[in-house]
Amino acid sequence: MPFQVTKKSRPLIYQQGRSAILFLSPTLLVFSAFILFPVLFSFYLSFHKWNMFSQERAFVGLENYTRVLQSAEFWSVLKNTAVYTLGTVPLNMAFALLVAYFLHKKVFGKKFLRTAFFTPVIISAVAAAVIWRWIYEPNFGLLNYFLSWFGLPSVNWLNDPTAAMSALIIMGVWKTFGVNMVLFAAGLEAIPQHYYEAAEIDGAGKWSKFWNITLPLLSPTTFFIVVMSIIGSFQVFDIVYVLTSGGPLGTTKVLVFYLYEQAFKFFEMGYASAVAYLLFALIFILTLLQIRFLQRRVHYT
Image (cartoon, rainbow, N blue to C red; front, side, top):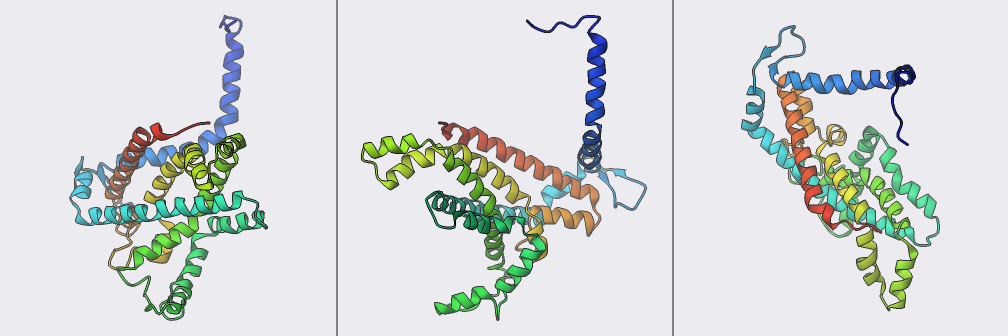
């Protein structure tokens, strides 16, 4: 029987409402101060010209958005972000699935290996950059030493415009693939064993079971990882800041680093806010397209 609001029950409902707001008030206060206000204020700033130190904010309408879209540097930075995304997401997912599938079997030291592969995720970006600066060092670095085994020449990974983005992609994959490995591992654990037993009775081999059972039933996990990985790669900032600072010659400058420069180096707060909202619109459209075209390929058990 549905609950009916009567005159007698109204005070109780109001009291419960006040109690709920009182209990939620710390969270609402933090949310309003650190999320809601910055979002609304940056939207307001995107229509103004402000250097962060002046009391005056001149209304400029859509001029900031027009300047961003007419800037050649913005399109160059957008191209760098797209290259980083196309480089990291497929590699990250393939490596994460390979490791998760390997550790799904009966392997000695499985828990230790999972912990070891997940460790880069919890390492701070600064500490990771120190490690990778040593690996990428052109004269004594580990990577060039490894290349020398095959007679390949040394590469100046962080200062060569043709190699810097590759260096960034390798570090990005190393730093983040542990999260996807854990998600794939959970997805593999959720696949019912009787599908494999039925396939074995029908004479299916390992590749056939992987292609026709594992991959389709992993599709909900894969879909989630694709969406979140693309969003994360468009928001990459910390490893760019500490490893290359957008160089050399701007070849590793990505959208969020460009936004940071405009806001806190050149103090173009309105322009930076316009970049932030264009980035939000881009990620929103990409996510909608992925839901529109990929969700139909998702299979559930």
